[in-house]
Image 1 (cartoon, rainbow, N blue to C red):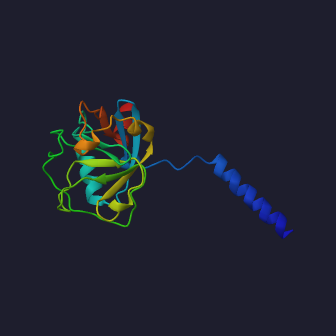
Image 2 (image 1 turned 180 degrees about the horizontal axis):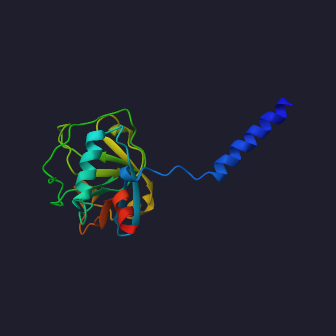
Length: 186
């Protein structure tokens, strides 16, 4: 009898997983980043990096990222964007204090780019092509690509002999908060 009850419980649990819809991501903390190859969906993590997430969302809502290039792309490492100058020296003009955690840099992780000063992060960020454990605890992790990573993989790669600098780089077509994009649809 006990075995039948356990089996019934297991089957009922599996049925609930199949019948109930998956929990939707929080549209207020989800970014749609359109790149030439397609749409990349990014989940932001305000619990990990509340100041960074708020800053990136503010810039996104202002249209700051629209049209910016992937100016530094190192094959097998990462793609970097968010610089209005397009050469790695620009930003929005507002630095964000470092929010280092124990989160790991894995494929699709978004990290806030910075100079040697840990608190110099601003608008530039990078997306990892593969795990980069040597960055753990040294850069702010603030999000994760949840779909469309193949479109990041397709971004034009830079010159490995010139720190990944990209000649005629790909650009962000448009970047928007999912909640705002969904309001425009409805």
